[in-house]
Image 1 (cartoon, rainbow, N blue to C red):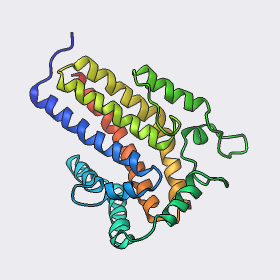
Image 2: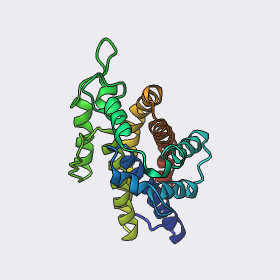
Image 3: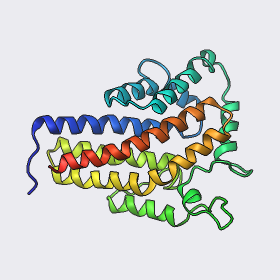
Image 4: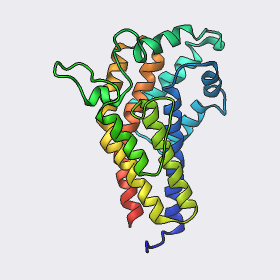
Length: 242
């Protein structure tokens, strides 16, 4: 039987998991197709952008790239989107050009494209071995995830982290240390074996090719947070195991 944690340590682990969950869920949403609903969710004192800023502040990130990305994202909505009257057309065109096609994609949002490059160095195909590996990881964790995108889409993998963290929170709430430790190991695997392996290259391509400060900002935020959280998740798991 796993030894019980002190109340203070358990509360700290739950709070960290809650903040991490909110960040991953927000990032996952921000990588989806632009819609009026998305804009409505972002704006306002209770919008997801405010929540993202709050959660990051609670985790005390001293990361210049993360701070710069958040400031640029705020600038996009506060200054480049005057009174939210700008039509979504330009934003959607940029989303399609970068991530959908039908032309050559400068930054395909799929892990398999980056992890399974062709002999000439060009992007690999969709639904590769990496895609299957991500799906198997979710199934091994008991999650039959059926997102709108393929399992190795950037949004699907970020949402997967959010789902793992929601399970961790529930486990701590029920004082089930064994279950919490188990799902924390899945979090670490998703970060270490998948997100950290391709997100930096993907985000660099987005920053290089995007004409929109929205995607430049989002790529800065995502890359910085994934790299920062990779180290944090290992330390959190170590603390929880004590």
